[in-house]
Amino acid sequence: MVKKLPLIIILAGLLIIGVAVWQMVSVKVQTNTALKEAKEIVSNGNKEDPSETSNTTEKKEDPPKFGETVGLLTIPRLKSELPIVEGTDPNDLNKGVGHYTGSYFPGENGQIVLSGHRDTVFRRLGELEKGDKFEVQLANGSFTYEISHTKIVESDDTSIITLQNEEEELIVTTCYPFNVIGDSPQRYIIYAKPI
Image: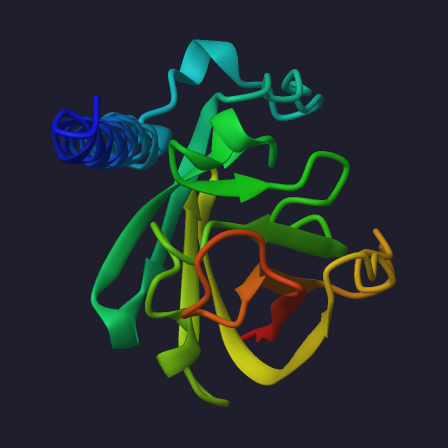
């Protein structure tokens, strides 16, 4: 048994590495699929059928379903294009940036909350500074926001999500610190205003 112990340890290590690689590849595939969907949504958004629109009444769209791709987040400074999906559950965040359900969408004059994993889509988020921009592209248009400030809060602090509808603001959140493996004790919050 003692002679087999090193072999068991090596096999266990290879199994752990294999699972980690499989998870990384799975997330990458899901993100790429959602990114393709997001680009199609954005490019097809301006192609309205005149027979489906009316000048007197506006057609109210159904809210997106959890996990549904809704748009594209572009971060020019990072040269990054990321799909936006509805919801912030782990399965949703494996596809891209999650839109916090219940928060507003661009153009609705309220708080827009987007979240993502620090070790996948938001790996380089800490490089952004005041004045950098986010561009949110949806089927109904493109919206640009400029970073006004950032802050770090404890992971259980939900006070940043107010869902106010008095003025439009974009809030982007991820786990913090960026270089921690496993659960993070804090959240990194970026506030951005429309321009």
